Length: 191
Picture (cartoon, rainbow, N blue to C red):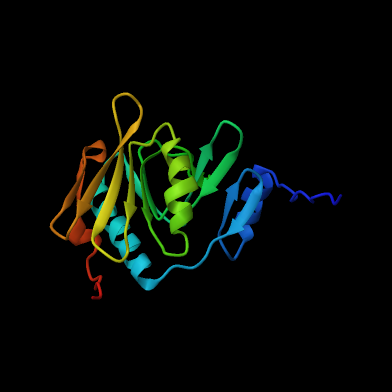
């Protein structure tokens, strides 16, 4: 019988130290590190539109948006994860010297074909486990379509579908409405 080699796990501290110097971003899942793939221009346009819109709308307010250069730490019952959401909004920020946030209120993940399965599975489940999270937006790249997972009064989540460039996603949690026309500005959908 052949023994299966277990991967060498690294600590949260080792991961955070390595990310400061890394040329490529990595996500951290319970001691294992995974390099992130690059994104398409369309993906970056949509994420940039989301960040730019939220930056403008939240200026001078308590909550602030962060782009995909900021990690979120997720403490699950049996391990820690770090992801780089495309955009997140935080109302109670970590100290400015930290390299991550703990308490996002809104997370926006732009779906990519190469990461779709992970985004809709393990990542979505991990985001929904964040106690501070009020809304998770999963944004399609090939059509004007957003699924919102909104926290309900009982602590669970309900899903809402918004489609078409005239649709508007209400975000009363941060006193903003996000129009899909603004989210998909300059994005040209093919036939």
